[in-house]
Image 1 (cartoon, rainbow, N blue to C red):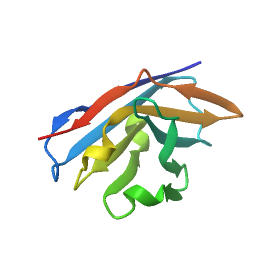
Image 2 (cartoon, rainbow, N blue to C red):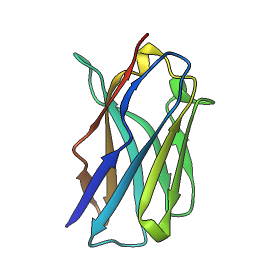
Image 3 (cartoon, one colour):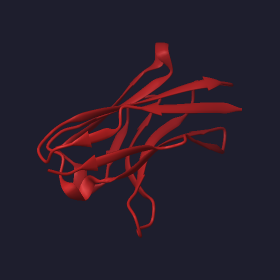
Length: 115
């Protein structure tokens, strides 16, 4: 089993920045993909960014150039640096870890972008 704990969400004005963190604990394997998803009210959950254990990254087009995903293996933690935030980035952000064919989810953290 793997437990994921997210932190760093909150209320920010348009143009502002936030950094989300996701700490993994439990049965950790070195081969994995960690991702951030988000779900806005009335919308489907969407993949925002992902990173593999060899630092391959991918981003949804709407956040390219504004968001950066990174990881700290020593801390089993993945980060999502979000800059130039827009109201349309408002959503609950979820951390996901995929390892050995099993998907694990965090509880989610709310990000609200509003003036």
